[in-house]
Amino acid sequence: MSEKNREGKRTARDRLAEEREKQRVKDRRRRGVIVGGAVVGVLALAAVIGVIAANSGDDKSDASGAVVAPQGAVGKDSLAIPVGKDSAKSTLTVWEDFRCPACKAFEDAYRTTIHELTDSGQLKVEYHLATLIDKNMGGSGSLRAANAAACAQNAGKFTPFHDVLYENQPPETDDAFADNGKLIELAGKVGGLVTPDFRKCVDGGSHDSWVKKSNQAFQDGGFQGTPTVLLNGKNVFGDQANPLTPAKLKQMVQAADKS
Image: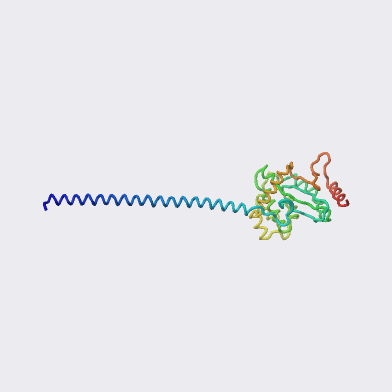
């Protein structure tokens, strides 16, 4: 075979090998694109599944986190905390906000009379908690204090803790009750209230949703502000022409008790 023919055959083989190598490179690139696309697809699917799972988790949490009423709560949707004997002929319905200065003024003026009437079995009080000041002034002290009061209800110590909160109410512009530590410190003034369960309830906001639902009920009720005080369903507080006094409240309750 001539040298020219041999050279021609080598050139042909080289060209063939070169073409095969180019084809292998193309195949590798194509497989890389396919695999890369598959990986991206899997990651995208995983991300979608993650979002769905996260949303499902939120929905489940909302559905289960639901509204947890404190023990012994009564009334529609269990939004009232009762104080006094069920056999009492008169019921005082009180809508309050623990940050509300007017509520403190009401409590300071009527606390002794209300305790006297509930202790004697003549009056039952149903407390409804609102969070108006949080909305008006900003902060979360109304919510945090109301949750803590609901936690105290679980321990059977709502009334003394309720009184302690009003006796130690900060200025309206001071959101001191937003600090759970402060609320637990005040709870220390009520014998036997500060327990691990109480701390967990306060710090965990166990009754936050219940408080929010109570506040919504206040808004839906069309009331003008806190405190709103009803005696046997009739608004008896805030009438400037015929102002309520502790003595008048006592007289009305005693009159109902005798009838």
